Image 1 (cartoon, rainbow, N blue to C red):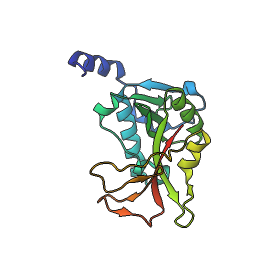
Image 2 (cartoon, rainbow, N blue to C red):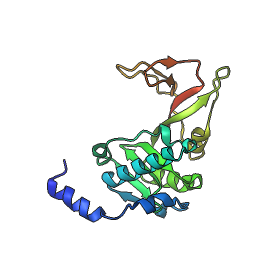
Image 3 (spheres, rainbow, N blue to C red):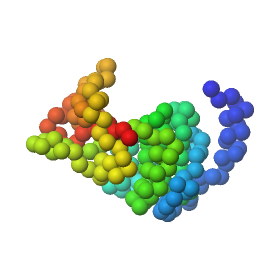
Amino acid sequence: MTTFREYLDEKFNDMGKLSNDELKKGQKITTVDDMVQVSGRVFHQAITKIKENDIAKGDAAKGMVTLSIYKTEEYTKMKCYLGKNNSSGYAIKSKDLVSVFSTKKSSSQAIMKSAIENGAKTLDCFALRDIETGKIKGQLYELYSKYGFKINKSLNDGKKGEAYTIVNGVSDYVDDDENVHPEDPRVVIFMKL
């Protein structure tokens, strides 16, 4: 638990690092060195602001609409990284890669190399499943596969109290009301290195 003194020290040390102008920039990041570890509070501030900006601009194509954002307190228990452009980043919760985002598609190489270097071993993401063949495809699936992640086919369990189950690393699409849609091509896949 963070003491009040630690909270104040962090607040003063981070002052001015994330101006609205900086958050709008979004230059491409190209190397692992372009990713720097930041506090959970700073990470939460950046990802929240960027998601708000993209939604306001109607820029749902970048995937920010479906991106899960944790509470600040949760990010403080994770290793959080932002690109020096302040508009790309990720967090690692234990060994799970979470909250990956970028306003520049071309930054994915630096993000993935940095995440793997910093301990990411598992992740989950949205993908599409061909209803007839069962074949998985999708932009995120292809990106993560390129860096060695594979569907965790040994994962076959349901979460207690959840309306869905995971079969061979794949879960059916579940809507906001927790209704399962087995005929919907959208799925969540669970991957590991």
